[in-house]
Amino acid sequence: MDIIVQREALLKPLQAVSGVVEKKQTLPILSNVLLTIKNDRLLLTGTDLEIELIGFVPIQKMNAEGTTTVSARKLFDICRTLPDASDLRLTIEKNNLVVSAGGSSFRLNTLPAQDFPSLEQGEYPVKFSIQQSQLKGLLTKTYFAMGQQDVRHYLNGSFLDIGQRSIKCVAADGHRLALTTIQDDRIGDAEAKLILPRKSVLELIRLLNSDGDHDAAISAGESRFQIVTDDYIFTTKLINAQYPDYRRLIPAGTTVAVAERDAIKQALTRASILSHEKFRGVRFQLEQDKLTISANNSDQEHAEEDLPLTYNGSKMEIGFNVAYLLDVVSSITSSSIYCAFTDPNNGVLIKPAEDDESLYVVMPMRL
Image (cartoon, rainbow, N blue to C red; front, side, top):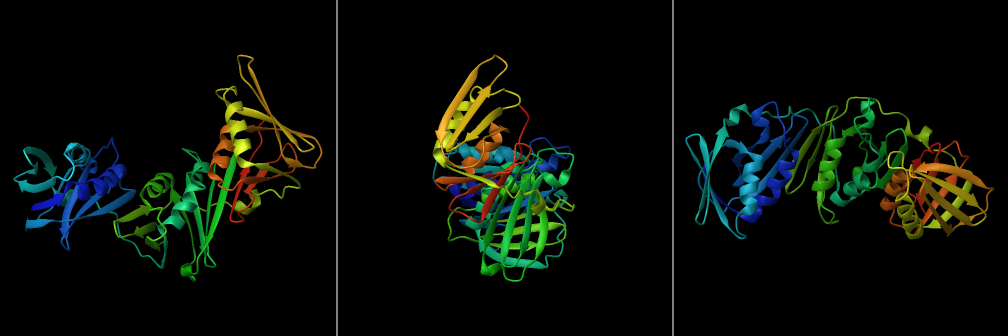
């Protein structure tokens, strides 16, 4: 290998690929990035055996082809600290990769490319294209409700229900649920039900472009999910499990309250300061067109916030984890929030007032 690439062209995909590579590995080669040349592009591949990410780098000049693997962290740190607009020359000399730029030169140890693991390529019967921003919006509005190291492993990810020209994205951890939907004719007759692992969801949110002009080709199989864009190929294994019927977790909600989003977010933020550090509980006291939010902690400190809202139901007192409520309110962009209560023992249904595609459920807690 003997090629020249621009620093900026290499830095962004290398940073993305380094994010997939695990910091602590039992196999040394898994901390490396695979460098290969194909169709006049440098391909950077990183994997943790569950996720594989391939980034593309245009080559300025190629004197010789070749392939090798090198430490992802070290190569990224070198590129990051080199001057802007640098041209990098990458050459293989015996068992080393030499990186040269201006008066700087670095000699890095390598491992054989043939030892680099590759995710088995399965069949992808489901294929369609959508805008990257649509998929990113789905995941961003729901990811916070995913489980984290839950013994019910199917909760440690996001459920995609694809069908009827739409994608529903669901995340739940037993205490809360987030659901949002996109409609797009380009989905066509595609049908699939799959669970993306937590790490894959977080990586996709980081990788997907927010600009509506960029498309992504989606491929889904029984055990794999793949996204191809102009900049990368992202492949992940799926959680092999049956996701519970999320529709049964959505309460009907008979008593409705409508509040301004910014006002309730600010009130919750202030009340949370004096909530219990471990349990994070706040108490809602609902009465005619008024909500009182209060919090206490183990030091006998107290916070109380009164704010107006539209509410015509009977008086009700109900406790919530304030962090869960703030996650929901922060993900909503509409100016008003619609809340439907059943009773103090059932969850509250929360929806953006101007959006019928998203809804959230937060279960109560005893205070």
